[in-house]
Image (cartoon, rainbow, N blue to C red):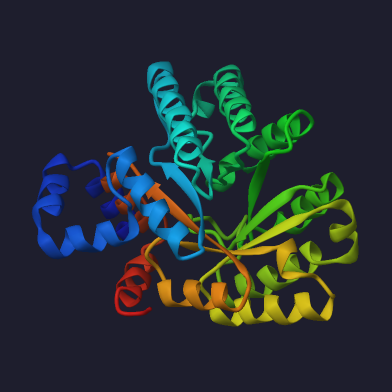
Length: 310
């Protein structure tokens, strides 16, 4: 394991450093720019603010890799409360879930039961659920569960990471299913055996996957692409290619993280594009924040740069 990654993982477990971070003004301000808050009411307020700007949302209760059935059930109940709050407040928001938060590490029986509860409640409330993608070790299990539930629920989508070599084959299968696909670059620290180590290759594959998602075959099968990137070159490519293919702005959307490139989000809305912000919240904000840095320490520079961009 890389020394920097080991450091961030160790820091993610430090209660003392969490308290220091929470009490240190500049650090707290940095975290709060990217995390809506610790409580559900704060997430609701953040989504309401986005609503007023014409920006859609995907709300997510933070947490992953739970180690007990109780934790998985608690996380599921919190997610059900999130769905209810979104519906009661008539928010333009779906939700995102991580399968390891719902008990994937403890076996398929637990995560299957919890995910079914979430999807059923979301269907009742006419809300969409995005199954997030985690590290490469979970990709196949995640896609298998998605396909199993896709047969019963159509209010669910999944995520594909462009830095994985396997992703073109996965997108081809999702096109056959007519799925909703969120395309990201990927932020986990993966070995070169499974992922492109160079950014240029990841970006090139991102474009190849966008071409697949915007293809006539994909559109005919009902695929709905969600292009999740802050890279303006990739965003411009998507806009130009969609126009060339005659794909309307209603048939896809751009997705960005809460608090990052807010000016770009507003500009895209003004241009008539559908824009969705990923809004995380919860008491697990500190390990979430540190683990994102552990997965890819280059995110430290990325986040620092975006503090001064709009």
